[in-house]
Image (cartoon, rainbow, N blue to C red; front, top):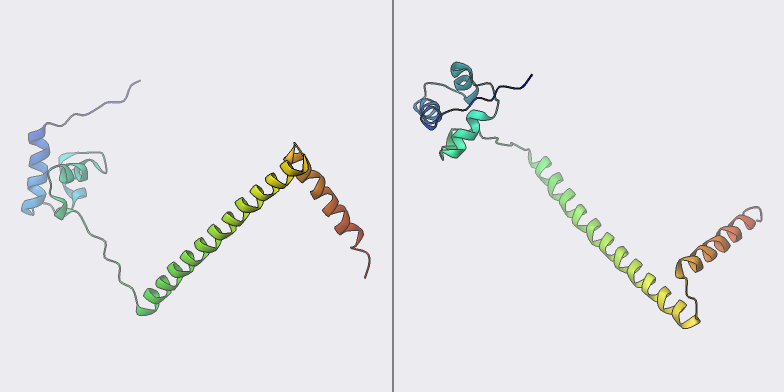
Amino acid sequence: MSATVIKYSESFKLQVVRDLESGRFRTIHEAGSFYGIAGATTVKGWVIKFGKDRLLPRVVRMETPNEQNELKRLRQRVRQLEGLLADKELGLVISETYLELACERAGIADVEDFKKKIAGRAHGAGSSNAGKG
């Protein structure tokens, strides 16, 4: 069973938008229901297509001064954390590059294998000191 596709003529689309513009319908949903248009965004698309965006509902966000200050503070914190993260990433790249150069000069061909060996030693040393103290 195949889905039915409904094609609307340009004149029909324009009539629906004109009816909205004239005030015959208060909402896009109301116009769509009257004309039996099933798609929730179909009429909205026509309104945009015909350059009548002013007919679309607008969202106006009202905030208290405390909310505005909190938003500003959080945005500053995000910028600060992004900067710190970028610094850490740069430090990691520098460390990786330094390790590769050091391994090259020491004649170590497999840097990844070297890192695994060092990590194993560090882990072993940490667990042997755990019981002391």
